Length: 220
Image (cartoon, rainbow, N blue to C red; front, side, top):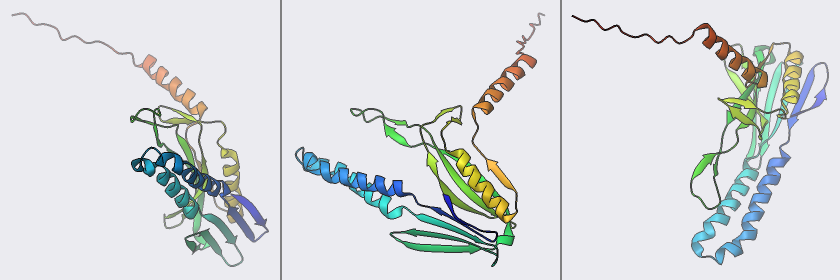
C-alpha cells in the first residue's frame, strides 16, 4: 500500500497486488504446459494440471486492487476495491473514526512432506497484516495490507526480521496522524518478546521451586 496523494485535507492510498496476478498467470500456464505430459500417464492424472489452472484463474479473478480515499473536506473515507469480478465501494465518516490499528496475524498452510508421500505437514508460518479503522461505536473496518513468509515460530511466536513491518507501521501512523486519532500496533511477538518471556519463565521457576511433599504414614 502506497500514498499516491497527500494534501492538508486529502489522503489517497492504493494497493496494487500485481505479484498476485503474476502468480495466477504462472500457475495457469504451468497447468497448461504439463497437461500433455500428464495425459501420457493416464486420464486419471489430468486432475493435477486442472488444479493448477483452476487455482491460477481463481487467483487472477479474486485479486483486488484497493484504493482508500480520506477526504476531510467532505468528512468521508471511501474504501474502493476493483477486481475482474467487479467493483465495490463503502464510505464511513471521518469524525466517526476513533482509532487506527495494525493487526498482525499468523496463518499456516498445509504442504506435502515429500513428493513420494501422501503424509501432510504444516508449512512455514505466514505473517498477515491487517489495517483496521475502529469506529466510535466499537465496529472495525479491516483492510488487508499483504503478507510475508519465510519466518519461523517458537511456541506460537513468529520470528522474522524481513516482514516489511516498518513500512506498514509507517502507513498506519500516517493515516492516524492525518485523521487525528490514536494509532495502535497490535503486533506479533518479536525476538525480544521471546527472550523476555523465557527469562520470566526461568525467574518464576527459581522463585517457586518444586517441593516434593510426601504423605506421612500413620502406624497404629
